[in-house]
Image 1 (cartoon, rainbow over the protein chains, first blue to last red):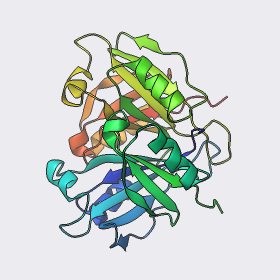
Image 2: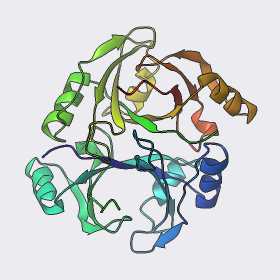
Image 3: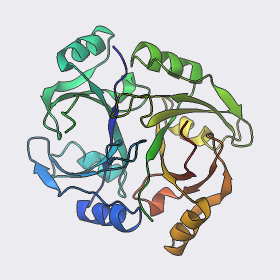
Image 4: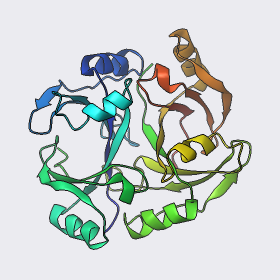
Length: 145
Length: 145
């Protein structure tokens, strides 16, 4: 496997509207998507777009995620980190099934199954204990339009 | 201020050689710099280069940092997170002094002073409590050759 693009940094927040206001007013973000619910994942999501090396807005995103309901997988994270914080990193791969075989073949624990991620492509998560302490999302590359 | 490029994600590790081997052998990184010591910061550093949206190796880096001595500012982080983990994020700005004025003018606590960062340009760090729980590095844009 070859290391893919760092698609996004997942940042958990207790209040997505406040986080959007922070990125807009304090960090100076000019391109933030409308937040949307992902009920099957238990999160509300918005993307903060950032410039890439060439100056286009195609850099690594900040993916803001807020808990949606008490069964949210990030409910515990927010309880432990009431201000929010860095939650996961997501790297792109060309083929999600080949990547799944790669990681499981190396004894890495995949959390749950392959599912559809916030970018509409299949993703899976690898246990932080097997990944140097970082919850790591592996996602099939979205089409860059 | 306008949001700049997400230059790198700072990842703390107890063992930089093991972390380099992990990124090379498990994550498939093909471009990792030689580690080097920054005694004045108390860290040993290596950069994992990643592809950007255009396919060049100009994406957001993973900055591996390991403690250098017991006075290292990340010694406590590693004690609390023995496997390592996400430590900070770093955004680029065109002018470090203007950015310093911007953040302090908004009541954000800057940790220490402006210093020379691992990329050779001036940087400062903003307190995670004032930044939605994320230790945030603000760095003057390195020259992209």
